[in-house]
Length: 432
Image 1 (cartoon, rainbow, N blue to C red):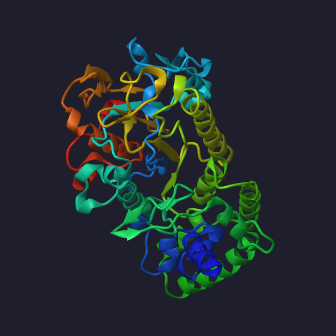
Image 2: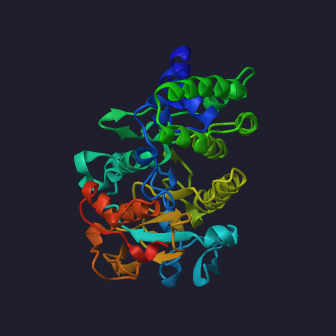
Image 3: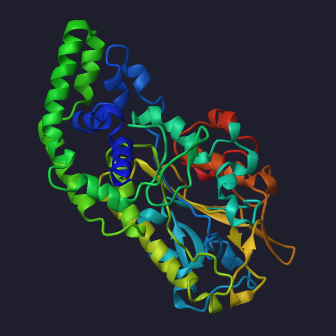
């Protein structure tokens, strides 16, 4: 069983025939390596390379109270917040725009806040088991495909990743693609595979040299000048290959567990290795806190650790030179009640949630908002042009609008997203 899991993990990271290892070592897209005589620069490079982004998505079936303490929720005096100082109403700015939210959000570096958007919407379910349905946008996706898988399919050609399938890096067995269940990749398993003695990563220089000799020989005999020029434009130097392998081993060796810290490192490493365009993790923000007295047992402390994990992620991305290549989003199966139980805890709530989006293409600010209804608060309609409350995106379409806007932040054009997601619109006011 151990050998089977190890073999599956190795295939996930390096692909069939170690194609991914050769891609990492040479700097060439896996698609080029698999068909060097028929590939061309035109069909291997994303049409909008400047905007294309890898995605790291945090999601969970726990229904964390992520919606309860973001900008917009402190505008109403009857919305309950913990008396803990970490959750106190605090003024700060998002790209110069003043907002008020829980103090913990203000602790993120300003450069991260300046590319952060808080998107108010509904998920239209209050059942833990419906996370797969929320990932399928409650029936709005074509062929019932999950949003991470749709985005992975559209982004994989932009990056020439080892695989199209999104990867769950410790978030659990939550993903499917084309009806297939995808396995969870435990961060410690990734570490044990790649950070041990004689790891393949330490052989990148030799893999690079042998791989390039083979391809150069093939293209010299049968290739075109354009193909040889394309090869030269992308290939890594021997020094770069050696340094990359050493850097990845050092990064992976720092994984101590399969919890949030390990998932953050694993996600960054998987992107640096170009394994998949979409990685899923699980960052807790309070969990299923029905009886969380004073919202102090789980909500306040997990908001602190959750925001810290987001900050850790961006610090790691910046250290890897990936801060402008990755978009992060956090959304869950549903939100929590904001008024109903006061500070005695929060129940499931289908009518309001908040997705956090961060990235180069994200315009900092608050999208949509809340309105009192049915003894609590609902997400409002949204203006697709400005992102303001009210407008042409009705309440029932706010989940699809969030998904399309996230796709837009990843560099995918609206007409393409419309082919895969019914309803909703890209909120152009949420994008740069």
